[in-house]
Each structure stands twice: as structure tokens, then as C-alpha cells.
Amino acid sequence: SPSDVQHKHYHYYQTVKTRLEALGIKVISIELDLFDFFDVLSKISYIIKQEQNNGNIVYVNVSSAGRLTAIGTALAAMVHKARIYYTESDEYSDTPEKWLEHGSTIVQDLRLKFLEQFIIQLPNELQQQTLVELYKRQRMNTMEIIQHLATVDSTLFPPNYEKMTRPQKITLSMKISRRVLNQLESTGYILKEKYGRENYYLLTESGKNMAAISGKIAI
Image 1 (cartoon, one colour):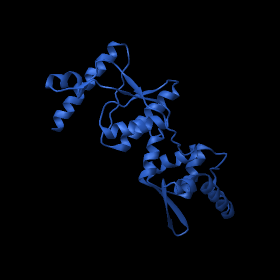
Image 2: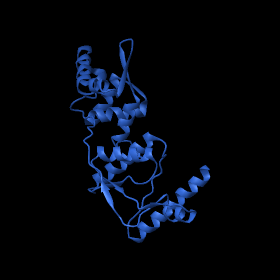
Image 3: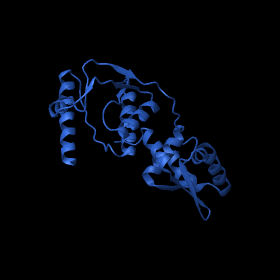
Image 4: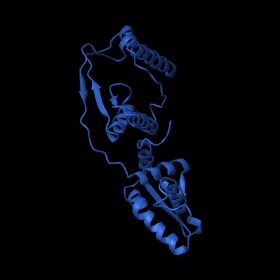
């Protein structure tokens, strides 16, 4: 039952937390939905980025949790070049007592298998910022994207858009399309919808996951 599963999760969490703290390791708990791929990608990516920004080398264990969580965690780790490892088990728990003490698998002799890194190319910084902002707002037109990117880099996208002449606006819109929007659209991360003279942009499911894995969506 769901309550039984939650009870087991809490028991295993407390057991691991107690053992780590006994070794002098500080434990910080972050809750996420194990069945929500976006939640897994965004939170794991954010945690990895924060640790790396603090100058830490990050190791990620993908041995536990469900398959969906393990896949999302491994992808996030590969994108941000964290070290991924898997703990090989010696046997499976076959009694309630063993389940309570070890979980589903038992490790007698610690054997770690480090997974080979694959290069997964993220969009560039301006494109990532656009994806994250689109996730927050759901839909944006070209002017709104320019105004947002002006807060990221005012040398590329001046914030005085509304005071510009129409030819200047067209030139700037073409610039942002070349540098940011065209590639996001061609890779399937955003969709463009035209209403009158305005172009509006929305995230696809792939774009939503790319925003998540950027590590820029704060917990």
C-alpha cells in the first residue's frame, strides 16, 4: 500500500542518514517526486550545479530508487559532468528481516562500477535562460524574450526596446532569432505561434526537460 511504501522509504532514509552522520558527513534532505521526471531532472541538476559552484567534486550514486529516478539522475549527472557510480549487490533480500535491514539488495563486499561519461551538449547560456523563463511564464512573445535577455546581457539586447524605431526593432528581432530562437525551434525545444504581427513561443516537452536539466530552476 502507499502508506507502507512511505513507511519503508522513511525507515531507509533514517537508517542511511544515521550511518552517514556517524561518519561525520552532513546530510541535507531534499524532497522530490520519484515518479515525476521533470522534478527529478530539475532538482538533481540544481543540486549538482550548486555543489560544483561551491568548488566541490560531485559523485552521484544511481544504485537505488526506481528506474525513472535512476535514469533522470544519470542524465543530470552526465550533463553536468559529475562522476556516476553504481554499487554491485551480492544477493537479494528474501525475508522481511533482511528487507528491513538492507532493503531489496544486500552488499557484503563494496564494489563500485563507475559509468562512462557521454557528452550531452546543453544549449548556450542565452538559450538556457530563454527556456527557463519560458517554463516560468508558459508563453512569451519576441519583445518579452528580448526584455528578459536584456537583464542577462544588456550589451547584446538593450533594455530600451520600446523606444526603438520599427527598423531597429526588426533588426534586433532578427538578431535574437539567429542567436537564440531559430536553433531552439529547429532542435524541437520551442514552438512558434503567430498572432497577427506577433510571434509567440512555447516550450515543448523536450524544451521543458532541457530547462529542468540546465540546473537553473531553483529548488
